[in-house]
Image (cartoon, rainbow, N blue to C red; front, side, top):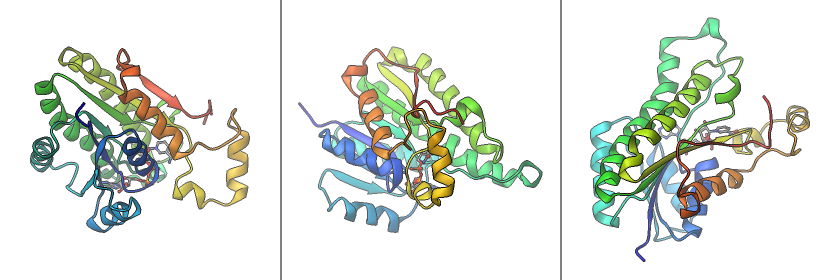
Length: 243
Ligand code: NAD
């Protein structure tokens, strides 16, 4: 059976990096995207320059460049079986200090990026007659967030994009789902002091903060044939935390 190909945006660290590792373990060829050459090179180095992983740092909101990239990937590696729109930024500016520029910055990466990448991938997947698009949502897409309004807005929007594209692309053999992580132990959370982390843990029924690998496993499941009748789902991976 030919090797499958998975593209993962924001694959240089955190949830994305764990997802790159998980898909490599599943035997996929993986193309990871990062924002800069330096961070992409560092990630490839951390993966011991595994010959099944390739790095790119094209802007995720440059429609023409992404279309060109994805066509090159298909020509070089044979197919695009899975796209994981994972790159995202969060911030927590209070609303009185909010600006259109701040709003646009978050929406560009968290929504325009997934739109551009999904569009380019869907053109290829439609030709192939199969494909899986997975998005990284968040538990804030259920509860909102009391500051940094663009971030929860973008995560509500990614759920909308997921369900709508699932309905539109199903007829082409393309499934579209999202994983909605709760608080996940990435560098940013790891840097928080115990006084901040401990009360958070008390708020989580499973009494631990999620690991990046928990989210990666959910992506692996949703990409697999075991999930072949699942589309338009937003899968919470949050230990049942209510923020
Ligand atoms: P992270 O900051 O550790 O990693 C973010 C990734 O996005 C990096 O690989 C980075 O290269 C990439 N990125 C950042 N800015 C970019 C840009 N302008 N262009 C291209 N790529 C860029 O983040 P993380 O915590 O691993 O988050 C990954 C996803 O998970 C995000 O969509 C985030 O919203 C979501 N999420 C995270 C948590 C959490 O607690 N960590 C919870 C819910 C949802």
